Length: 388
Image (cartoon, helix red, strand yellow):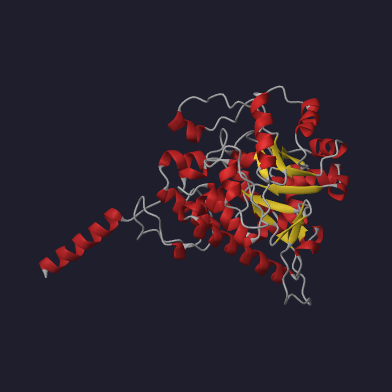
């Protein structure tokens, strides 16, 4: 008896000594069980049932330094947390007595057709999650028929990414406003020559990056980002003469800037707070879209609007679409899904598509194109943000 009890005690001690315990970082509890995971090893993809699950899996696999580089945000990460939590203050309206037997997720972005209204947004250095880096993001997006926008700070070259594109696959490409004008001109030419169809121009971190304490613990002091600190409206207009591709300013955070872009004739804007990585305390995309709706509603009538920030569920996509976004970006989640390579990114896309379809059916809407403000109640957000 004594030996049996000792054996059971020893077995339990051994089991719990090697069980993986991961800080879930306040993410929603989905019932994910990590006790049979092995630290540093990729968990079974079959364990993944949400995009948040994939973040925890990535945290188990990616080295602490590089996980921090993906996960980090500026200062106290107020905006990062707000991005994840804003959805709690939004209510969705569900309508009955409607035929939702044929769900249509398709949309167009700058005239190009895509299967779903969400896309893989720019995120730097995908190679820290998987050796395939941006290549598996590109192929997964192509096979799913969604847009991919690689970062200019990618692990792979923009030409390498373009070369794995499927026939007729459409990709845009992100660019920064470099203080080195020669570099900027060269990259714009390369992007155009490689076959990308639009430039997503990041405008919200001119001069310097945000102070990202979580990653600074591994990298030390902040370094010069190489971004121009003299970028103004004249510079913005000038850049348009350096390429024949349409330019989409990314990082719009106010109705005033949205209206400026409209008046300058840009075809679209990209509402974003850079995942909370630049200005901590910046509003969420939900709040920015509400600001534009209140103070510059003509923006939605005369140009396309895209948005990102804390999107982890299908109902998050629907909320941003209902507030006027035409397409919704995901930045960190595809990077986390990429620990499995293309199959993981494809799984992420499929999960989000399924959630989107299910939520639309439960709301009584069969077409993404028909989603409008009647499907959301944002009064609580508005009362907090606008103070009325």
